[in-house]
Image 1: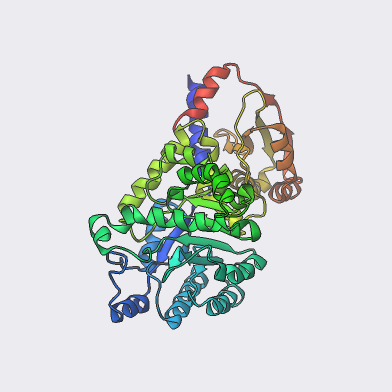
Image 2: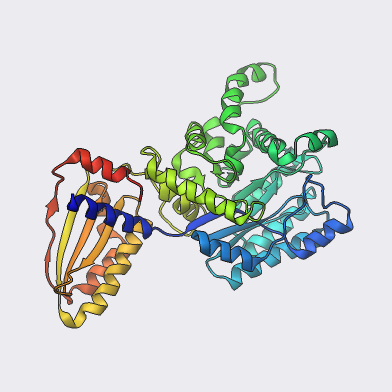
Length: 449
């Protein structure tokens, strides 16, 4: 019993070492943007008032809930002023520069003017250092998928741009419908589905495969719409209403943020049209109260730990997929399902020369943290120090497979540790262990961290 409790405690600590969350769905709302909407009598264009935004408050919320980095995009509605779009992009760029590692941003574009949008995209990506582009589902009735947008997509394709979509008020729209059912409750989901369906039906995403498109709000209705589109495509093609559609190529470019009503069931249905490496955490800050977002993220962490089929995806969804998508990590994440018959478990026994102890502990803690953060199959690297003799170090090591372990040995951070500590280590033993009670071990890995 004591051994079981100790192992669970160590797994808890390993989970606590996980890297901060990457939030791909948050909004910047500048005073100038609000003022321009007010002057044009457009503050209620989307049927509800825009929230106030303060970068300091945003950072405080991020620190409180464990969000390392937030990706900023301009909120709806689309400004009519090219100058306001430029001002917002430059404001987001300043926030990124003033708070290194805390903010990324995807620049807004002055559509429906395609030529102006291309100029702004080049300026934002090449000069401001934008991390991607934000596109509305439609601007003044110009919907994504429209032929006139092909030249813009060609430019974004050349730059391997990440595109974050966001629904805007449909055009045209019935004011009565907006009053009966606010846009955010239903029409935004239809609007997102409509825009992505338009792009798929014209093979936009297949023709420009270097772009990566983030679909908001748990994929809207796409898990239902895609199978229907596929089943009806032959009839539509027979009637010359659409051409050939490369379903695999189109869907391969789509990523999905989990802002809104996420749940284990939502993730499972998304996995019917995508793969685990295409799912991302999103908050929708500041449209939802901070405490509600805190509870929502806590609930996500809970079920990504408790649900056996989703637990291997936890770190991918919370940060690893976004890190790869935005170029923060070079290696694309892969879900690794722990299997007891393939798992490597050992307790490394290290004795350190006393004069090097402080330096050794710093290097050991660094390699353990980086390995758990960056390598999905490294389940646990947990160093412990003997209370009786501080030079005696024990490290609980758990790897999903031997391949994971061999890859771990080749990583830059492990090589730094190995070469840097050769002269510090007096003795080293690496006995591989096997569980005496495999069934109990399964329960341990399902327990709440």
